[in-house]
Every structure is written in C-alpha cells, then in structure tokens.
Image 1 (tube, rainbow, N blue to C red):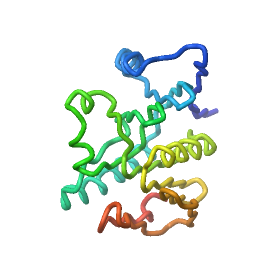
Image 2 (cartoon, rainbow, N blue to C red; image 1 turned 135 degrees about the vertical axis):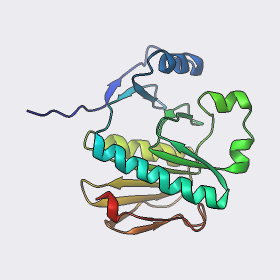
Image 3 (cartoon, helix red, strand yellow; image 1 turned 120 degrees about the vertical axis):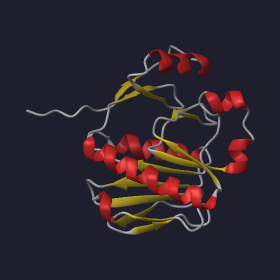
Length: 194
C-alpha cells in the first residue's frame, strides 16, 4: 500500500525561536523543508513527487523567462524562505519581487531569509498538501502585502486568484492566467499543469 506524507506541524507556543535560531535550524537540517507560521507553528514540509516537482519547475521557468525578458524584478524558487512582516517564514512554490524593492534590502538580508513579502506568489497543490493549510498560507500572504497570488489546484481542477484587498476568485482549469498590472505581459497557460 502506498502512503503519501503530509506536512507535520509542531506547536512551539512555549518555545520561541528567534529569526536567527530558525535560520540555524534550517541550515543544520538542510534535508528538511521548514516553514513557520505567524503563530510560531513549525511546519515540516514533505518532499513532492516527480509530477509535482516537474510542474513546479515549469512554473518557475515560465516566470523566469518572462522576468529575463522584462528585467523588472527577481524570481525565486520554492527553496527560498521569506520572513514576512508578521514574523512568519514562508516558502512559496514560485515568487517574484520588483527589482527596486529587492535591491533596497542589505546584502546581509538577501543572504539569509529576506525580510520582505513577495509581490507575486504561486502555490501549486501537490497530493500531499492539505487544502485548508494552503488556504491559511494564502491568507497569510495577502495579510503580508502580497499583491497577486495563484493557488493552482490540479486535484480539484481549479485555480484560486488572490488579489490584495479583493475577494478570492475561483476559476476552473484549464485557463490562461494574466499577471495583470503586477507582472505586465506575463501570461501562463495552465493546460499543461493538469
């Protein structure tokens, strides 16, 4: 019988890790992918399978190609941990930050977990991802000032579009998504992510 691993959540309400301690925990346990919620919960993310990893790589490639053509900002992979204003440490599957915002960080801030909210994020639901946890994560992104976010959900054949200050829009797959004014000219066809 095949079992899929789900994320493990550790409640650390009596243990408060500083940003430096969290960074060291991640560095000392590089075989694990950690995130931390604003409430201090430590999340240990399981690795994804081949299909999800391939889809995630395609998303990063598409975003990266657009960014190289426009030179408007920086593209980040799921290995990047961002320290959000609420204290959470989150790793979107793909992220993008406008050039001038990222350039305003010090070299030391850019070397560790950048203390900045991305302008744009993509989360791609894998078979191991709990949808409620992903919804909480997307809400945390919006509260942190992310301007545009997409939750691509192949299991339910939907994409949820999050815009700062607006209601979540749900569309059925396959569709072509627009980066709107946040990522001018960026278009992503989701037909290959099914």
